[in-house]
Each structure stands twice: as structure tokens, then as C-alpha cells.
Image 1 (tube, chains in turn orange, blue):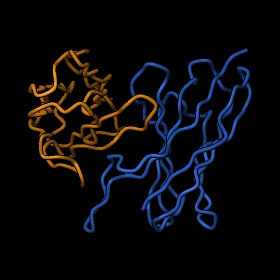
Image 2 (image 1 turned 120 degrees about the horizontal axis):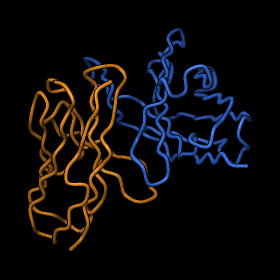
Image 3 (image 1 turned 180 degrees about the vertical axis):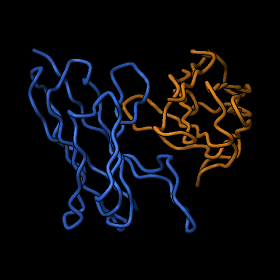
Image 4 (image 1 turned 30 degrees about the horizontal axis):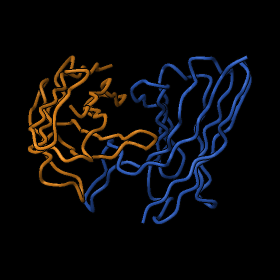
Length: 107
Length: 123
């Protein structure tokens, strides 16, 4: 099974700053990686699929990039509602697996 | 509007059984494969099981194989997770989820989620 690692585990930033979150796969997943946002007490929300495509309704400040084993989620200018946990997930190999998450905290 | 509502969670002793349900609305349930995904307290997400649209194909994670069974009743728009021989490390919020689909194809990302139901396995 493919193992996903995310860094940093915790990121403290201020509103208006740029956030860069990383996800690394134990082997190539091509472009078959997604990003989710999860707020406390809520289910995850799909943000990005196939590495760089925004899901419906996702603001343009969220962007994804990467291929192979290294991927990045960028939030260009943080809004107060963006402080949450972000998970990556691969669908390249069965079973689908998730990373441990990055917690984005308000500084 | 897609709506998924899980139920059936609770506190159960190790070794006992529990059945979770997920009622779907807002889409043609019988046309979609469905998944269960769980999240232990303070932990990341773990895929648990999937069932095809007509129920003929089922796959589950190694961690639950032989203990958990996924099923569905398309006449009731309901997905189930039958959990046997529960262990403390099965403690988690269990989500049902529908995979991501475009008009052309579907992929194993999770676009629609229920609110989750909490299962606590403890003596």
C-alpha cells in the first residue's frame, strides 16, 4: 500500500499570508492525488483532485501542483475560514490511502 | 443536492457487533459505488470498504477484512456496514462517502460525505 506523508504537521500563519503544504508518496501516484479540508466536527471537503483540478465551488485561492511522488497545496492568501486540517489522498494504487494531515493554525 | 446520513454508532464492548446505516438522497443511489471511511479520534482518515453500484463487488481494508461486511439495499437507498468482533482500535467516526464523478467517469476520490457516526469500542 502507498504511504503518504505530509509536512509540516502543523503550520502557523496569519490571515493574508500564503500557505504551502506538502504531500509525499512512497512511490509514484502519477497525478492521482487529492486534497481535502476538514474543520472540527465536520466531514472532509474535497478541494483538489488529480493533483491540480479544483472541485466545484472551491475558491481560486486554492491550487494544487505536483506529480509522481511530490505534491503541493497552495493557499495564496489565507482567509479566516481556511484554518483547518488538510489531508491528501491517492487513488493510483488500491487501496486508496490518506496522509496523516497538516493542521493549519492561526498565528 | 446529495445528502448522506449515517446512524447506528454507539458504545459497544470488545468482541461485540454493530451495524451502521447510511441513508442517501438527492441522487440516483443505485448508479453509484459507495464507500465507508473512518477516522480515529485525533487521527487521519482510513478507507474501510467499497461496494459497487449493484452490490456485486465488495472490497475492504486489510485491517477489517473478515470482520466487517459492506452491503447495500438499493430499494431503500441505504448503505450498511456490518461490524463483527469489534476491537478498541476500531473506535472512530465512520463516514459513508460517494466517490467523485463527472458525466464521463468516476474516480476513487470522495466528493460527498455524511456527517459521520461515532463508534466507541470499550469495556
